[in-house]
Image 1 (cartoon, rainbow, N blue to C red):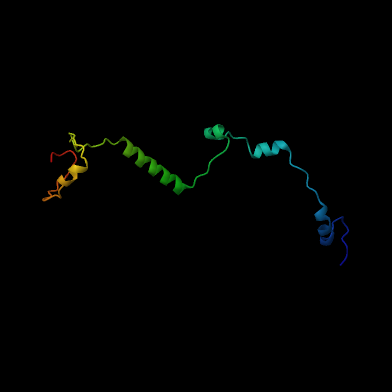
Image 2: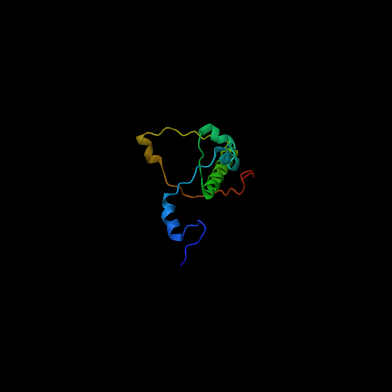
Length: 115
């Protein structure tokens, strides 16, 4: 093969020069033009870093918080409107205790209905 008349290098010469080649650094204004400074979210200013939470974990956490708030703010229903005093029993009064002879359960269908 005849060497070319112009000053072009062969593939072998280019392969030998390539590892020694150092590229010049990019100017600073180029990086600023391609990647402009964007202010981060407001919460990153508070802690300085972001917290990454997977979406399923965030959904479960939100559901638990909603259920907890619902249980906390739901008014409680009081089924007994009067207190029944219990006498203090001593060791000698234990013989007076007897098993229940007839059990009649009371079914509460709704908390607001009169039973």
